[in-house]
Length: 417
Image (cartoon, rainbow, N blue to C red):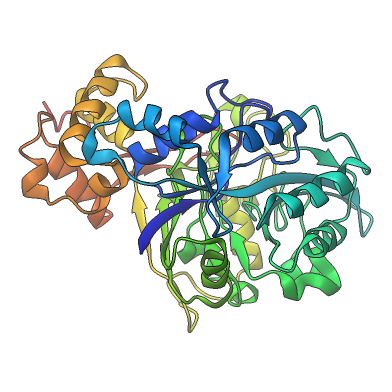
């Protein structure tokens, strides 16, 4: 079975997330986007875990589904062309802050468990270390290596993926508080890591430049803080719809189909810069300014591109022996917003989004598979041309920096008039 999986998102119990991030809305938007497997997120949070137990049922494969009455309610709200099965995988993001090597480390990790008993073991052990009740993504004073050990001891099939490994502030390889290698981060247990999440501000091609990452499967996920963001990045699988097959694909590559990605410049930490002064710089420009903002002389936030270049031992475009395919996409609401000259969250875009998905099916199918000729027959002028340009990589890029999302455009100013 071929399907998309989004293995990093949050519930409404994580800080700075939408109050609509409940299991029902997750399942609804997964079908609108064309995502089959979602992570539950936040399983260490006691109230969220209660909701998981109340609303989900195990399907016998290591995955979970909404109870039948809830599934029927969600399906009734969807156009028939978007209806499809949704499965949940138990997972949580953990933030660890600790001192190692005379430096404070801040690293985020994705933990996965094959059943409720294993998730409960992790939850109980972490609850003895720190506060897991106030935030769905708890912050714990715990070495990355020891968190990995707790995960592995919960069940033979539990596993950990380092989250958004290049993010400056909170990641295994980040410029502010990370390490120079995954091995350095996880120590003597690093051989149990078989996949890393590249994050919104990098793509596989950037990661190929760092040969120490060659042994890891590169994964991409949405890190959604609202249900509408589900599937903005995702992994592709061609496996059985079960926990073991998904884990095996990530571990061995068998049945792993690669990723769908942001254009990395859209991520909010791609370039260097200082948001307060509106300064965005390339790595070369930052070096010329010795890492200081040319306006205020404050320290620049060095972005993902800069950090990759620092650790790279290959030239851009050079490939390792083994790679997985990827597609660079623009969220459909952003495409529609550009075509209509309005914001992606506007009522106009929402109306067109409903019309287009009711006609053609889920968003990822529209972005990747529907022919240009078919798209030109939609109610949105130039939609086919827009997605043709996107699929060809013929886009205009304004890179994000210092927490400010970038912008990817498909048409020059005035071209649509």
